[in-house]
Length: 133
Image (tube, rainbow, N blue to C red):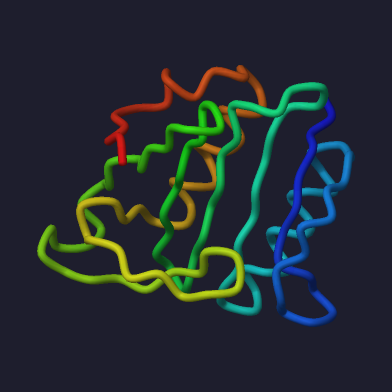
């Protein structure tokens, strides 16, 4: 299966909005390299469709997933209890660190598994609970 994605560039450590079409293995290799560096950001969509689009920002073992289901609406995936609800966690969003509530924090492993599920099914709504922004 192929996927369209953009991510933090390995060379510069900065977000590159240039999208790539590749197989899932290439995306996984890129993600794994970012993970070995401790942080990163990526955006994923299925080829031929602008939406839905999932983003995953992570730092250390903590991650946050956004869903953009059209140009006007976005959602955050409800966290898995990795962080206390009243905690503030910084994760990369493009080139900036965004401070987000612990309510929306997942482990990196869980976030990556959800991203894979989205790529396999193309249906983000079935991944779990979302909170509209």
